[in-house]
Length: 165
Length: 165
DNA sequence: TTTCCATTCATACTTTAGGATGATTTTGGA
DNA sequence: TCCAAAATCATCCTAAAGTATGAATGGAAA
Image 1 (cartoon, chains in turn purple, green, red, cyan):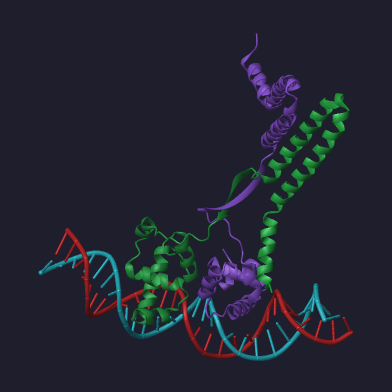
Image 2 (image 1 turned 180 degrees about the vertical axis):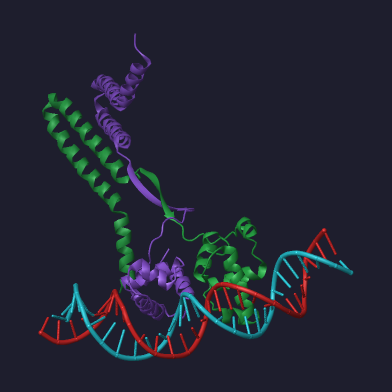
């Protein structure tokens, strides 16, 4: 006995070769037709041109049918940009263009980030193992480059420009 | 005289009918070939099957060529959705639960918001038409209720809790 | 090698922020 | 009407922030 799976596989093989089978059948029918026509036109000799014409038409149609059936469809890939409401703001991409334009140095950016975390200058100095004066200098440069007057403004502007998360 | 534009339009018309012209030429050539073959095979009568076969092959090829050239190409459109991270969630919904829990008054929230905009106490006082001392008092209460020590921390925490945008 | 820039630190000074405390006035409900 | 919370303002003081200026160092580019 055949299992359901084997049956399904056989069916697959049949459908896969459907076109070949159809082509074979068509050829058989055509050959039979030709033989019949040949017999007919052996008697009626003057219909030779009609015979040739019919052959031409039939085989032209066969060619058209063949190519239409066998021609592989062109696959056209259309990429549609689908706006996904990215709920999680977990992804932060730094605006390197603005960062470059402002000319903030690495250390200055570090200080700015710690400022945004709410740390005091003294705490930042401790975190970065430098003196309070150094942080003040960095902070001043940051305010200068960001064209602001206070750290709160610096943080606000930096966040607005996507320089910090 | 023809203008450049008229010339271009004529060329368009020619190229547009190129396929029809080619088809016509092909037919002419084939007819000539058939006539020649007919003459040949009037003498050699037993080559009739070859003649028919050639006609069949030629016209099959013609059919294939025709359909390939003239038939509209099958286009299978595959739509690939490309997720595009839509920018900032422009909608800000205030966390009234947290606001309630913290017990911030209306004026305190106002002051907090202006703080987040980077304004100094003096500027906030001017904006709200009250004295600097009043703002200091409000600020102190805000820090107390938010359990922070500095305005930068207050702004950071308020934003984190979605109390302000 | 020289020059430029980032980083570091210092000193002195001014401004702003923040804490502590007390007081007055407004206002929305019980 | 009375009360509690909110809002207002003041004074005194300390802490932190911010400005100005100068300078040493080290690395990278010209």
